[in-house]
Length: 208
Ligand code: AMP
Image (tube, rainbow, N blue to C red; front, side, top):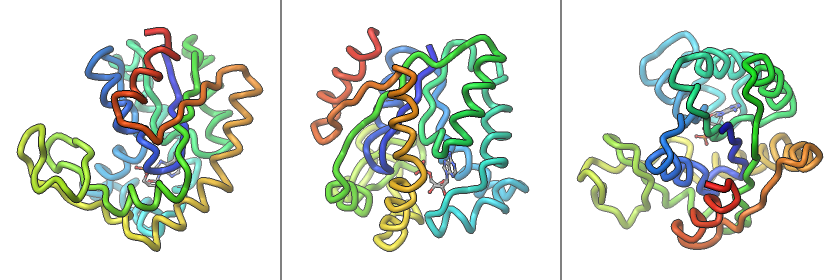
């Protein structure tokens, strides 16, 4: 099953994707995670992407589409992919459709995790991530509750960059909600609730 998780940065897409992977063994394809790894390893892609990411702007479509195409051709993508943070533009959405059509594995659902922007700003500026296992927590977590690893704040989770990321979301990504509604793939879930309640709705919506 191939699924797109839609929603503003900080809506909880990554957290829900991680739970789906734990319980249903699909591939979690987060373009943000792939880009952060490329930046850390200073690959040619990472070097090109860094300045866009630091500003909270979108990395150019062509770079993102090539990165995703390569990743979904790997064997571990055959068990189904949860796309997290991709697509973010209409061009990316169309490219994804045509790539999945070529692979004979079309999208089954687009799940919108819906959270109001006031809540998002608070969530993102207090978000902390585990350096070792990727657990997503808050500034109340002195260390990772899952593996005791060090919690860090992402470079782009400061208030100025968060504000730009939300503007970029409204302008470039929110129109995809209508795109998927038009294809009859959209399911909307209220993301402003405890993680497990949101997850129960996600699982029900996907029929898992
Ligand atoms: P995320 O972890 O999904 O919040 O992504 C962090 C940053 O990576 C974004 O603010 C963008 O700069 C970049 N990025 C991630 N996914 C995409 C995408 N699909 N298209 C363009 N830029 C992206």
